[in-house]
Image 1 (tube, helix red, strand yellow):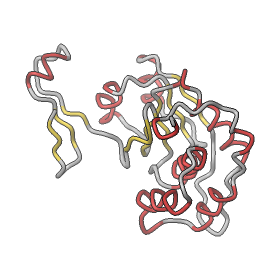
Image 2 (tube, rainbow, N blue to C red; image 1 turned 90 degrees about the vertical axis):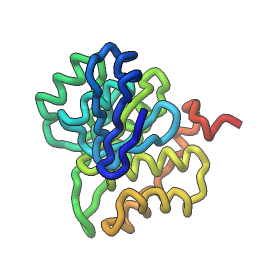
Image 3 (cartoon, helix red, strand yellow; image 1 turned 60 degrees about the horizontal axis):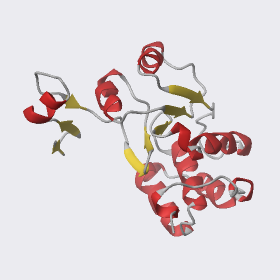
Length: 190
């Protein structure tokens, strides 16, 4: 596999493409802000049709969408056609200072994300920054990351639009009720 870093596309060589029963070279385009969180968990912005080949290559079982808007029909059909379950947890994408991240909604999304029967899974919101960053930040807390590392990761994705309120939410989120959920992440196996 070749990675073209100039445009963020992943291109399969002819041999790799033949191995996937394709005669032509296939270009895989990851969604905006795509990254691996841990084994079986990925994050990104909202995927569209240009990302379908890439998403198929991940062999996803589940997608967690953190946007409240109705899921686009074409993307929903893609998920259905590929046997991918959709869990939608509508969190408004409000701007500061009126950010209201519902604790119960994040807790329910975490339960889905922590259940290995749902892996591999993709967590996304519109841009893969704030709502996704809050959910991933809570996962990192469950993995016992120090807060400075959690915030560094959040800020890497949020960039200049990092929100103090999101970081405060991550810091104050009560993870105690989720500590009974087994963590099968690579960083929690000790």
